[in-house]
Length: 113
Image 1 (tube, rainbow, N blue to C red):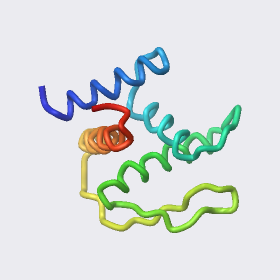
Image 2: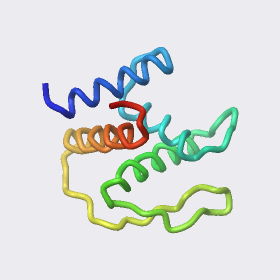
Image 3: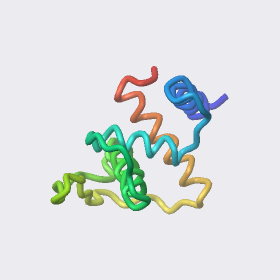
């Protein structure tokens, strides 16, 4: 089994143990977005949920220098600027890339080994 596959299994197991259901990349990004946003709120609009997933994607890719926070907007949302160009990827490669970045985030946050 590849290291990335093993790492992704660890992420899936963490999510299953924490939330009691199987997960995918979008769900993991949503949870990371909630964690990074940090504000408690009962419900999010569809647009806010997309914003949370975007926040998470930028956050996990920031670990490899692809994005930096430039400032917070008036509602407290981080505004990201792209620091490095992203490689050209197919949709399948994009998902694998995000999984790799998510694994790195979970390890950096000591959520998995």
